[in-house]
Image (cartoon, rainbow over all chains, first blue to last red):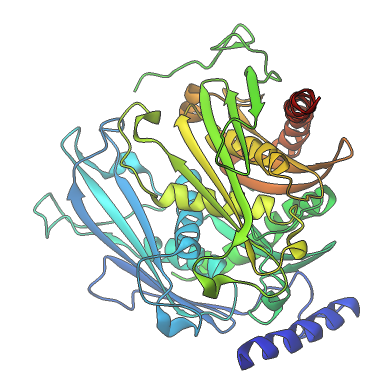
Length: 261
Length: 244
């Protein structure tokens, strides 16, 4: 297939650049592509955000409704995160139920939000043991130019920051803004031998989809890690990734903090 | 909810020290039909792994002209957990299958078997936290049992943070009520840990704790590795005896 041949050529190009200590788009190895965040674009949703990370584009929407709590957490709200790699976003995406990549994406984003305790689930209790708020975060990929993971994580948290709890619609009190207590940021890096390329674009991923995603909270704690891709990760590289991801997350968090001002 | 204390008087709920593994039992070659197999217990986890292949690829279009494809299916029996689990893959199983496959793929010498498939199936018969690590340990032994050429052995163990301390190989209560769970898998070659092949984490830890968790996991992995080796040796000795 022509696509395959093109990939091979791209791969050689990416590798030769890396050997020269450069990236194909001229970025530094630890440089993230420009980020644009637009919130509240979907009026029908309780919260929404469109994120552009370079040419990668993702929209996340939050919908809420009252539902029954889980028996083991009767006083806590529920977060359900879903991601769809819809076919308009890439020639390689196919219609149908989420595949392993979409599932992994949703679960890693979910863990970042959950373990940073960005949303206080106890505040989403309407009636203990009976009724709690269920938050549906749906991540819709629009354009995959690499690193959908970080764009999705960003879109999800930005959409939550933009969310108004629709209490009036369900006749359980007055509408109120959803309190977001932490800002988890996911940083994905492409690993090639002992090199780390932060925020890989699609062409760079032609050398192998070998990535690590490290999500940190605003106190620099690590709240989620996912090694993704069939590769051997050296301990020394992992060690560098920890501090690098914490530092890069701070940069992204600053952008996130500024969207509402 | 009532706070559950997971560490009492410097000991864990099951009496283990912080750096102690659960009892492990490994037996290679337990299934007749599979090309390689392994039964493994890690605490209350009971898992069976089977390897089929290298064999023809079905469906055909998944074939790779220059290497074997590796498939991994993690599956939980409905009776393996407290509340019956609906059979078939759920989102969790699909994710575990993916990361486990990716943990084994770089270790298997796929280039030796173009246009073929190496299928790894693991069934969790009883689960008690760390089932993905138990399954990987079993799968690794089953691969050796099937005679699949590999760069080394994959050994997997998790570290958890409970009541503020790091503990090796968490069991159910520690996984449920702990602050973090970090499953690791390593490639061990010539008796040395060479690299990380699986790494996930969910919960909350500091960078320092994460580094310490890695060291603790490495210690645990070396112990498990010895048991994996023993199980493989035992199988071969048995085969030799039969031949004589």
